[in-house]
Image 1 (cartoon, one colour):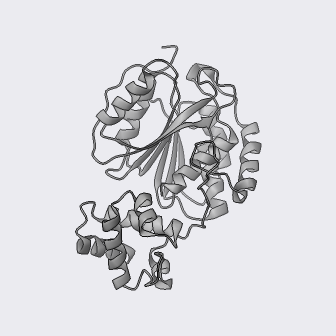
Image 2 (tube, helix red, strand yellow):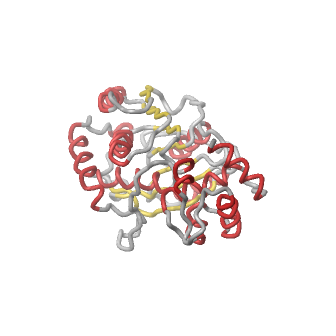
Image 3 (cartoon, rainbow, N blue to C red):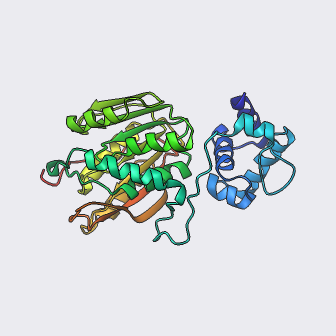
Length: 320
């Protein structure tokens, strides 16, 4: 029924983005209500007049309330809201990272710290370097804020940072449902550890041993990766991420922190050549344990796919 309403509203408004645009407004409203049309427009990445028109059509159908700021009616919440508990992520004092770790997440932080202690040690020949428990949580909150978790098919291209475990614990604490989670990594011992942690997950998952140099086609709404430190390695992971996306509107959360001259510019060229747009670049978003090459941090690129294309790639690891 929700799909019928979304398609109907998209036709009524004449949205160039089609149903995806209406879904973006509904998802943002689910997270933020009650909310002004201006803030809703920023969250949905759509012009304010378009968002106002979508809300007007939903209001005609009794799914958005007459009063302002914008909020669902009881019927609208039942039919359209995602059913995920509200999680506060905005923060004026978050060190420029844009994601707050509120008191709501304290238990989750402690749990991630405990599981991190049990994980296999990093393999330096694969440029593995574990991010801190706070960073794991910040990444998941950034995904949540972008509506990249609930109801999504998620691919983790490499997961020595245990984002899979963080996603599981987030869903358990705050609700929602992942449609599918796939962890692809070359490190068999890591996959075995993750499979044990996800054993009773309330969503389908798979841990797949895979070398990034081999193509991995698939259809995923969200791809998350923290690739090697070289520009060529980053571009290869980026290519695999694009190959794995379901289509326009799919998202990539890409961590990269090389301080080598020109590395960031080279990556950004590859992003554009790959048909991706940069929704956000959060500098020094990720903190790592003992990451001398990265200077202890890396940036988080939030990318989206408006059109399908493929970047050019080369060799992989720092030792290659």
